[in-house]
Amino acid sequence: MHVLSADGLTFHFNVPVLIVGAGACGLTAALAARELGVDAMVLERDARPSGSTSLSSGMIPAAVTRFQRAKGIDDSPEIFANDIMAKNHGLADRRVVDAVTVESAPTIEWLADSHGAIFEVVEGFLYPGHSRMRMHAPPRRTGKELMDYLLQAVARHDIDIVADARVDQLLARSDGTVMGVRIERPDGKTEDIGCEALILACSGFGGNREMVRSYIPEMSNASYFGHAGNKGDAIAWGVELGAACADMSSYQGHGSIAHPHAVLITWALMMEGGIQVDANGERFSNEHQGYSEQAAKLLRQPGHFGWNIYDQRIHELGLQFDDYRLAQSSGAIRRAESVEELARITDIAPSALADTLKKCKSMATGVDRDPHGRNFLANQSLKAPYFAVRVTGALLHTQGGLSIDTHGRVLRPDSTLLPNLLAGGGAARGLSGPHADGYLSGNGLLSATVLGRIAGRTAAELVKG
Image (cartoon, rainbow, N blue to C red; front, side):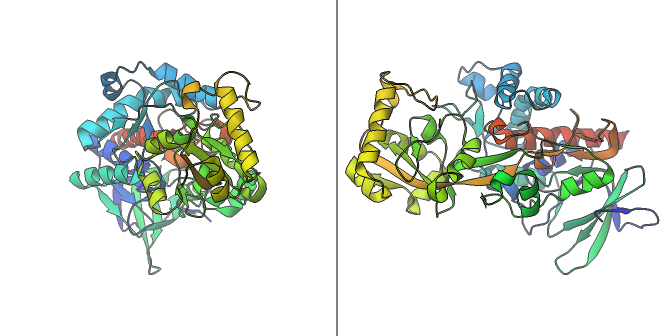
């Protein structure tokens, strides 16, 4: 049983707002609750908070921020929401999408101005599906930086994070009101902690192979490039309390994980003119459609791997990213002065590579059209020296979860509210619709931070009555 009756239980102590998960969603929720004068406690299963956020690039898309205005970027919540809905083919909850896009800029500016986070607008290229430059990233483009900002802010506000505290069960009344949780310590001892409102911020189910096989069979044999603690606990607890779930087949994949080095290679390389080929040197997709859906396409290729091929100009762009520099220092990035040398280091027939590069140049000059539908630009034609990195596809995190309203409150199948349960980030239904190709770059951290802030405020208001 994931949920036990709270009848007759005595809690070791009580807190107004209890939050499960100390990633970006949980920490943002705690800061939002504290801002309204309500104490919150964050429970974290690991010895030190990191979660899925630390594995990300730390980029949060937002519309109409002062950072955008300083760059002369014209954007709006409506344009942003339309980009999200276009990517998910209109299959996400538009009300939640609208609420999140409206709150995106205030959340970024709040994290920067009230909590010391440093953001820069990523310029020079557009991520797949975005019509505006709206990615806000820490200087080194890492999720660890974002986590450091949040952890420092939580410490400044004296918010308790209880680490090594694995939530084992929820303790609830028969009407679905959560009275508290039971945590288990590494030594096996348990404690019962009471609360007035509970926020589930413990991400999705990417680390649960059985659930992945059941809901996302196309990725059942893919490498998992997410946090091992994402076991689907929030979904199990919510369902047992009577919650609805949605879009369980949705996920963020990534078709550019250096193999065998297991380092994420930024998709900016593809957006700026790079190509991805299979073991035979042939392109097999439109690389500009998105890196999430590219994961499954790449895994269907011979040997389940491919090669990212690009040139010096694009290599220099990649050096902006910490992960790319790590891949280079690990030996994953290979340089070739000619097509013949490129063929040798990739073990691809020189004639096949030469033919593919010739076709790309022909499409860039307008002589031919790409059968996969990509628009090649003349100023992005590849030229020696070339660079190559061997890549495979992976599952990063799931996008389906508990159904919520625009305030982060968890819904039953009949759309009524559970009394005091909230969810955000990977625990909640995302913005991507039911399929991998609905994932718009940044949707994960957008849901984590913005829905975290929304849920934290809502929980505080519930407690205050």
